[in-house]
Amino acid sequence: MIAVIDVSGNNLSSLSNALKRLGCPFELTHDAQTIRQASHVILPGVGTAHSGMRALGEHGLINVIKSLTQPVLGICLGMQLLLDFSEEGDVDCLGVIPGRVELLRKTDNFPVPHMGWNQLDWKNSSPLQKGLLASDCLYFVHSYGLKTSDNALATCEYSESFAAIINKANFYGMQFHPEKSAQVGAMLLRNFCELL
Image 1: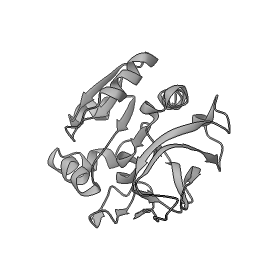
Image 2: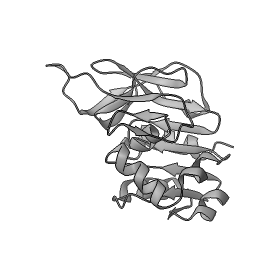
Image 3: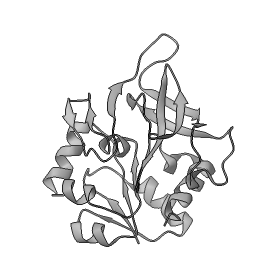
């Protein structure tokens, strides 16, 4: 069973529907014991890093998430919360993957937020890559990102390069929304759910 951490009060219907289509049993929860016992954990998120960390703290989940040993996936803001620090509100995050979240550079040709479809540039091989093509695109909506990381499995080019998929030990992050990325996103979610 996959535990989808639900602390933000945001609509999780897209992710829920994606997991249902894949036939992956899941539970929306903020119960610590349920999260600890899950085979996989997904930390989705929209909003700000400050509000996300506050919500995790209010539900007593900060140390719970840090202690998990099963595969954990942070999506969009959830990925950023796995890092050390976010400039968005100057907030300390979970610190399970090294890195600092910074505002993306804005130019005339590259407005912020970065919104729309973009390609991945895979830097390291991973089971998450199974079945994907180099030309595949994913759907992004974000203003902040991780600009450099030794833990990047894949990067993306916009006004500058940023980490699109990260991994350290059992913790993974995707800056894009796989649940809104059609068949390619579904394959990435399936590949995560099949991690041991």
